[in-house]
Image (cartoon, rainbow, N blue to C red; front, top):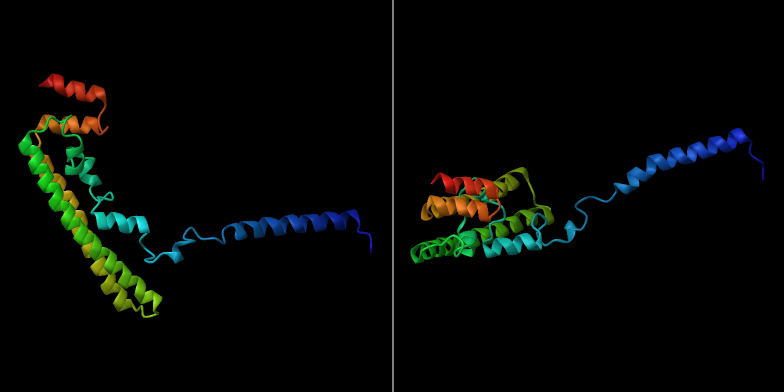
Length: 188
């Protein structure tokens, strides 16, 4: 073997370091953040998302209401003792929750079915611009109905509560500080 000069050795080391500096980031990014999703039955919905849709869960659809002083019936019922709900308020809240849940479960199943059909278009190699536009439009309409359902339920729930119960709810859910809640009580 031929002995390398110091200059050749340094050049070889620099080339090796440069090669590693270029290829290692490429190799580390070769795995997508979606790796594993290809195993999902419905690519756009996790098993957990599907379960929550089937259960009629809120899934954050009503955050605009919840975080702007429009309580939801599920949490109101969970806090019924602390909120000192009357028997009529409990009955009204329970009826509202049951109706919302039933409708949300139906819409959730419709959404799952629509996502399955969209996924199938791609899986079977039958996706076209027109077909996906129609399918995505349907999915968007179902999601809009689902979100509207959850938001309107919060509006109806707010109307069942007194203003003091609404403030107490905000405090119990951690949306106001103890000081804000106490100041509000002293103003009345």
